[in-house]
Image (tube, rainbow, N blue to C red; front, side, top):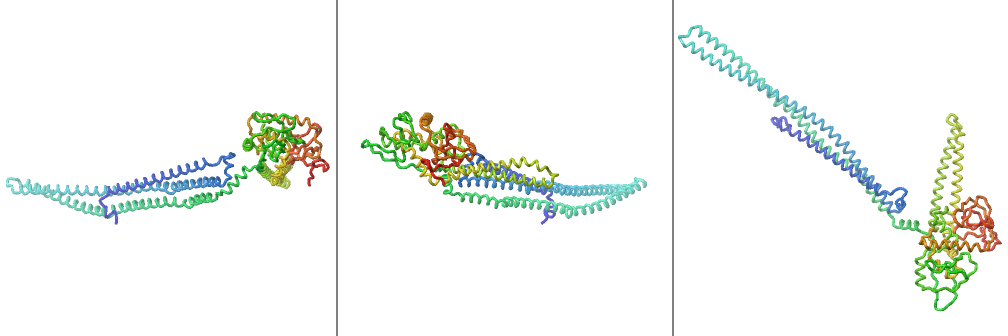
Length: 591
């Protein structure tokens, strides 16, 4: 099958068909372009979506991503970001392998088509010229033949007329001969022109046109093959990213399978566990007969005999005595058990000692203890551990810097032209000092951490011992102070009216202590670190200072010391090394 033989007379139709083929190719290019734009927009929207739900740095959302479900969601966002990247790859590959290539091919195709049809038109014009020459020669031959016939007839007429002179007859005969000769010449020219035209026409229909149409056919077939290859490339570009997209989806599935509900539940425990023991049983109070009741182990404190009662929320007021020696229980107004139970359930944890109260009041003013003693034991342990880890990282960083400076100094010593070794001494000294400071700071926090970790297992006994400091008080103070409990974080969340009453309470405590005799010293201590006592009830000490111990640590991390008769206060137990007098009353022996 050849267009040159089958379609020898369809030049115009072939011209239209090839133009239609180029239009189809350009339409396909436009289709691929729009597909690449869709892929780019889709990838952009996926990236924006992933970015929108990414946790913000240094925010509460970032802390939430420690849970496995949140980690899985974060992995899904990351996988979707990679998924979007594959759509960008599709767009890039389609643009480079299809769009750009086809656009260049279309230009070449148009040029080739133009050249082929130009040759075809040139062949047409040549055959048309030959046809015109043949027609002209034919008409001239016909005209000369007619002229020869008329001259012959005129000669014969003149020759038959006896009235015509012999000269006229001879003239007519010569004229007839000339016309016959012209007719013979025209005949010979027509014959040669006809032979030449037939030759040109045969070559036109059997050589030139078939060759030109064959080129056009090959051009069209190449176009068809090219568009088919482009369609295969179109599918292959998509197929190439399918394994990676599959990995992205597998990553999402793997992230979903990594969700561990038990682990998340444990994280909730670690995040919010206070370390406090639940309150004990409420003692049964028998109101059937007047009797002197002793304060139970779960009582907060009792009122001092002879002092007016102090109650919050409009009740009568009584003064709390956290360090009272005597145990007196005056009669008090009985309250319904249901009211006591509701008051217990709605109240906050107990204030274990006077310094805890003063520390809570100072925290109200915005001060945060360096040892995180305002936090519950478990949360305090976590904070201290985090602080120790951060300090160790800083130490490692400074150590690496010191090693680098040392190596540089060695290089300078071996190659003085590279630099002055003495110029690094100041920096090396500064880094060494920083390392020493960080190590001292780390030891301080490790001491606190060891203290907390050592106390946590026996926390229930310690809590009971501390709460027992109040149990020697009257039952009336329990009712009065039921609303003045210390929260697990050491802060206070009562209403402002209750805060004012707490301040009055603290003032009463100070007044009462002013009346008391100074406590005897039970030992001595040496300050391991410098402590700035900025909060009320604390005292500042300097490293290496020797002081008197008048009250040992009751389990809350504070030791009461005295510098002189008029200067005493509390310092963190981890800041001092205590030497207790074994003969002192109430002193313990430390091993």
